[in-house]
Amino acid sequence: MSPRIKDTEFEEQIQQTEERKAPVQEAQPVTLVTELDAYISERIKGQPKNLAEIEVETKEERLGIHRLSLPEYFEPLSYDCTKGLSCQYHGWASERVTVNVDLKQTILHWKQSKHGNFIFRWLNSDKRSIDNAVNVKGWFIVNRTLFQEAPRILFSVSGGVEEGANILAFMSVKKAIAIRNEPALKSRERVKAETLKHKDNPNFYEAKLTPEKAEGDDYAPSDARQEGRDF
Image 1 (cartoon, rainbow, N blue to C red):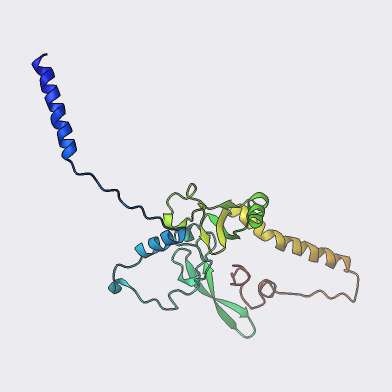
Image 2: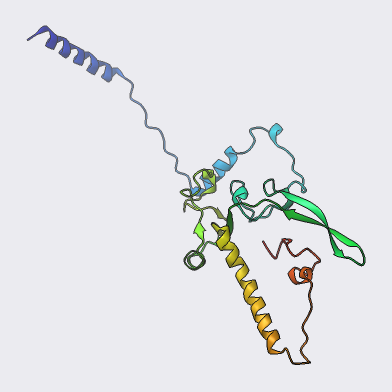
């Protein structure tokens, strides 16, 4: 047997001896947590690390926030503002608008100047509502494939963004605006048809409403968005 083969055998014996001497690694315990536990854990990680970092927020600073406001990541992408005057993305600006020329009455009107490229909507998290919204209306469920830069904490085990019993969906602005305006168009067509039907009837009264009255009946400008009516 050649010297090289002997050396190789000797090296293998040394290696086997060292492996036997190496300490055996203990198995690490595996902790199983629920989806809610994981969510709360991620929420805690995002909080300040000490009490000195906590800022006191006043009601004015959070004005306009409600339970169905969009998560921070999606707000700049939204055509509609869901945070009101506290929003940092949609360019709210105020202007004085005359509502009564004779009395020189004016109101302070806030107008949104910036818009995102999508319209978002919260759908009820039941199969019937989702099927109708997706299959009939054409809404898309928000997911990580389409919004890869969104924080993981926003997505539930289903892969969607959920808030209580609601799941977030979206579509393009052009299509969503058409769907949004469809009921108003149908209503005006019915009113017009009814008016023409009674055009020659002297007992038929046709109300003459200003744009402000027709829109909200609160003297707001016709393009003003009103909570409880528009969002």
